[in-house]
Length: 58
Image (cartoon, rainbow, N blue to C red):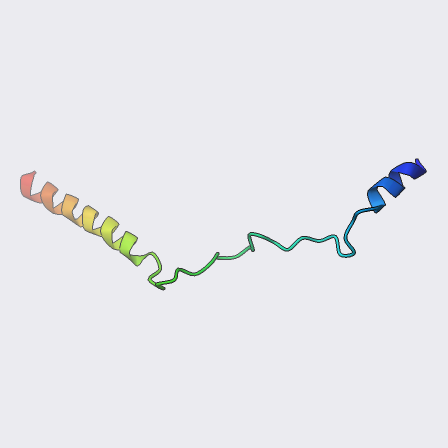
């Protein structure tokens, strides 16, 4: 139908591409720049504590 082409052609911007709102990649850097080493430190600390308590109480 010729009418469909006319309907979809109007009200379109000249450049019909949208800016990417979530760019691919690593995402934004943290403001403090610490990364996630504190999380890994806490996980490692819990594992070491578990092993030490297992050896002492086992």
